[in-house]
Length: 171
Image 1 (cartoon, rainbow, N blue to C red):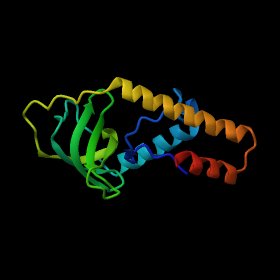
Image 2 (tube, rainbow, N blue to C red):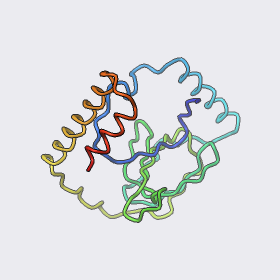
Image 3 (cartoon, rainbow, N blue to C red):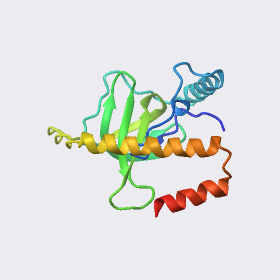
Image 4 (cartoon, one colour):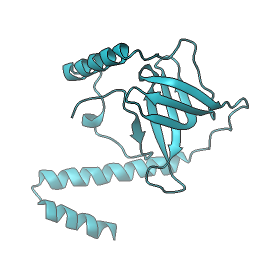
């Protein structure tokens, strides 16, 4: 599978802790750098317009843009970081569930034809308060579950045995 930094990343918002192996390394691999250079050459040769300096987006605005893969994306601006040129868009759920949404992270270096459909000029609503104790409890439970799964794997338990344990544990 080839690394493609221009492809939007869909995030499923959950508070599951990740292992260090899943976190990106601080130094990109040679393969990743080659893929980025290859993509940048393609983008430059195709005459794509990169994100202009001073470009910014208000939280709550509706934005439509086209990636260098000719994919049209549209959604509500959740966050924008000018220094890294990263835009977070809230889009309707790809699963079709009405109370869910997909959050796409876009690198504006690989996006063109950015169009603000509806600019939000009002102050964004305040952020929802978080129940820190509940979040910490969920994180602790997830960590314990992952540790028990890792223990089962290291103890040589078969895949069928692991699945049976998970089924019993959930009921």
